[in-house]
Length: 382
Ligand SMILES: Cc1cc2nc3c(=O)[nH]c(=O)nc-3n(C[C@H](O)[C@H](O)[C@H](O)COP(=O)(O)O)c2cc1C
Image (cartoon, rainbow, N blue to C red; front, side, top):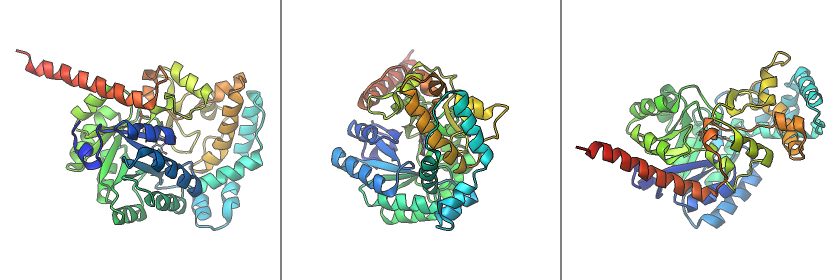
């Protein structure tokens, strides 16, 4: 295939795969697409290991890294990120009411409580990774590897990301949910815009991909745009290119691949889910993120809930709890199974079989070719 991004990134197919799983990233890159590793869950040391693992397997083929740098987060986390007050500052900012609600939830669903103190400390450390300082460390680790793209989720990339990437000759991408965001991102130095519609898994806005992509393409031209949100098939890929995108950026579709690290109980839920079974909820991170609807999302929206906190305080409350819920769900505990969920988009309804990631790439490309042929037949008909 031959779009602007194929030439710019030296890839066969304009198919970008966002994944937190290094195996998916390497598989998609090796299949002719472009794998992008989501770095948010990693400490700098662990990210270094993951990138070395990928380097050893892709034989110089192109891949990238995505760092989550939110525009605005809780002040206590900003202070902890700057080394002021340490993790305790952040932990103290979580009201007792939220811990009480969580403990009540574990009781109601008959799930054994995790070691909260341990979980709190490790979640608070995770919270510092979404501060500017934490993200800067991840950016530095990434740029020391032969990456070909660095992407910023959630908000305009900080000047330090743009400066460091440009100095290293690496293009910067950013996710946007509105054309105003896109305009701001380009003004901040972004080279590739990812227009992500509200049907996407993870943090997302409300405008659908069908409406957002042409708006963003027109707003930022001639800057190339990738379409994201709801794309899991070749027909959708053809539609995205028809809307003016230079390629597609997919996240959910990899979660049910053979390589994905998705917990088996959650993978089973995804395979059975319809496109109506997701919800945009603040219950895991504090910012609206699309995920499987489960007892967890319902309870946080329910009458007894104190309401989710902001980012990253809600992550401190939720992530250790979700780790325990996912672990217990694997043993068949019905309450844990009801609560378990993960980020995924509406295209979960199209994800019905487990395949290797490279098969997903080939199937999309084949279906894309069929769709284009059908469209050509329409215009060439007498
Ligand atoms: C499990 C999951 C985690 C995600 N985490 C991030 C993230 O850390 N950074 C980011 O830029 N995007 C993240 N996203 C969004 C993806 O980059 C991508 O834009 C989105 O998945 C595209 O829509 P789709 O899910 O319908 O394919 C995540 C998506 C999923 C499904």
